[in-house]
Image (cartoon, rainbow, N blue to C red; front, side, top):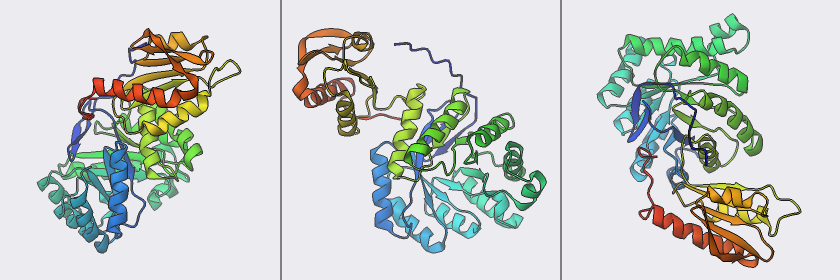
Length: 371
């Protein structure tokens, strides 16, 4: 398979969100955000663990009140994935979660208020090696910027972001990443392009409020794909009005399609036509669902006939080429004498894929630093 990746990633500083490196050439991390009430500790812990199970590198948790901060303390003790606390105005909440071991603060310095409050948060972050994420949103720009530009523009998002950056620069704090999100693809892409030319800090990518599962996936894939293909972006979130678990899956699929991360199985499957010798669509859907737990990078081609099947199978770890009643089976690009019975294709392929994954990665672990 064509292996050269033409994407040359933008050089950025590196920060650490817990044990996850962001920027500086580290693999692009995939994150999501809980949508449970943070004060419901068990529900939030359960959701974070579900995100951990599908490979989330980082999880953000909203902490709007002191009660939520106390709940955050309990949540942090029960999960392994690094947690970002989402805070907007109250600097005291930031200080409290810093005390409780937060891995990153999502807080805009310019929204905190007096300089002594900003300094208190920055000093706590510096003392405890906690990075800050500046998060600018096209839907909540400062009033004077709204009046200046009349409507959200890439330049407006950039100006807002740089205000917050300048505050951290004055306080000699460089452990931060920045996002300039918008729900409009071209607005977000334009803002990130401008910002990437202004700073060398890591950039957190996202198309905010992208929509439901289908439309949000399309918008995010287009917008993030444009930026990632230009080498822009160090961490990302796919924002969907859907189960947060789906955000992680889509995020990894976007990176996989650009060969920027290779976690889990890359299924190569035909859309099916009248030539198919077995039900390709139901086979692929069933295998994707059954094999979500496999983290090992693998290419598996499932083609319903012999027109394109052999070519794809030759460059896959495992390949299936449709045939009458029984289909051809390929392993590491070599056709095997054994054939797969079409009446039992899903179960047989699952066993063979799992066996191959165990050979490649017997410990069943993928370290983000090694991907």
